[in-house]
Length: 401
Picture 1 (cartoon, rainbow, N blue to C red):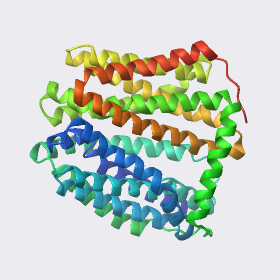
Picture 2: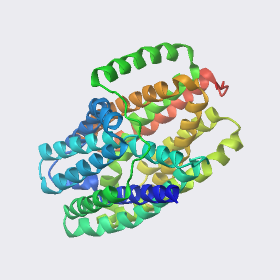
Picture 3: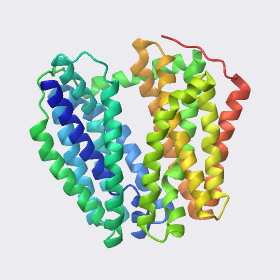
Picture 4: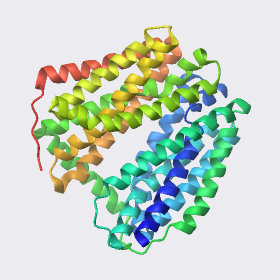
């Protein structure tokens, strides 16, 4: 009984949280550009998010350690609500940066805390099954619910560019109230935690990771692939809306495209295991999918036909959706279990740095040269990194328990 109640609370709160974000998923960049920002300035707003995540990950983690995951999740929802309302009330770059920073801090409070809460609670109530089915169920719920949010958000944006933010903030307010009543924490072991200790721990993580990186070809492969993808894919991430809005005429068209992306992501998650099985190699599957990502980007930018552009865009999204779980599996399979969390954090750090560099470089290029060159460079980077790595290392791989 308690297990099902906890799972139900997790699914309800997480779904509502994701739906609130889906309101602005198809119009975010158009919102920033419509407020008078140029493409470089809009990308700088997102750089603030990346730096916020890096700098606040450690201190916000202390809250979850000392006061509990439930409190950390509630703070996250509350701060995200403030971020949404501030976005809706702002009309300049400074206001957007402040809203983005608050949103970044909100996500660091939630980072790992929500999933840790549900796992600890259901295990404490005697749940002995694998949690894979729970998280797969969560992905289905949030994806399909977000489709409705995206469609509603497109309509709201056409009425007023701030309405989607306001409605997302209101939904987050109700999500916070619901979470307060539904989330119970009965199986939390309070830890003694301090910021200085976590900083020292992070430095030790870096030292160990660099040493391991020198001797592990598999981890080097994942870091190179992850960082290059994070860098290059800032182009379709940030520029797909300006590219398509001229073709679809309004944000409702963008909403329909993003619905297609959500369905593609769902399909990619289902197809990934079969694709890996067909190629009989994680490394081979990842490299081939990266090449597919680059091809999709090239198709998108090298045509004036809306339908061909859309096909390329969705094809690249499908390849991304298939690649992500395979890269995660490959990482877990190729690092020692005792150092797994350490090396996952290290790989995540490089992806974050790649994202920051990509946002700044491609934002500047887009502002100076337009969108065609960034897309061409993005596709070329993804393909070249994959081809060069294959020519140097082949498809041979080694698995570490």
